[in-house]
Amino acid sequence: MTQLFTNLNLSITTNRGTPYFLVSKDNRIRFDVDYIDHNILNNILNLLSISNTYLNLIYLDNVEEFGKKYSEDTSTVNDFFQTNECEIISIKDEGDKNRILNFHQIKNCKENDIVNYILYISKGGYSNLLYFFNDSMIIKISSDILDIVHEESNIITLMKVQFNSLYDKYYE
Image 1 (spheres, rainbow, N blue to C red):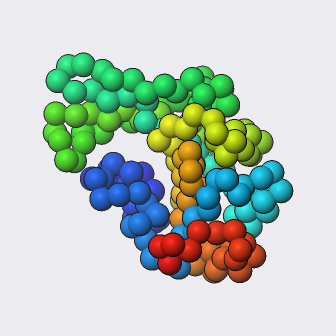
Image 2 (cartoon, helix red, strand yellow):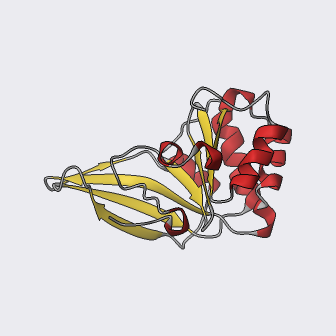
């Protein structure tokens, strides 16, 4: 198994599910993107100290199967995160050895680009399978949820107190 998130002992290449369900409830929080606005997002990112660290981006670009390549629509990601420095990570699917998953990784994303992308998705924009991450956290944004997994449970606890009326408690 390829460990892309080593401090959290997680990998997005497993068929076991999203990182949100692979950690204790003390290390995760989920928001419905319908309730995310610019102020709330800035408060979330401030609690995560995004401006004092780095976040990388990894997304599924294409899948190769039986000699054919099936590409994802990555134009939105490319619009928000323009860079020539993109590492390609190819991984054999653990569930189907005939499939190769090709991920693109962009290092050190700008905070403003991250904010703009998340707000775009929260307003109904197209969403790829995409994660922002560093050694201590993973942020997954999709068309309906914003998941945060953090190795420090005290940060998640603080977020659950501050955003008590906003975060999704269904899987608590």
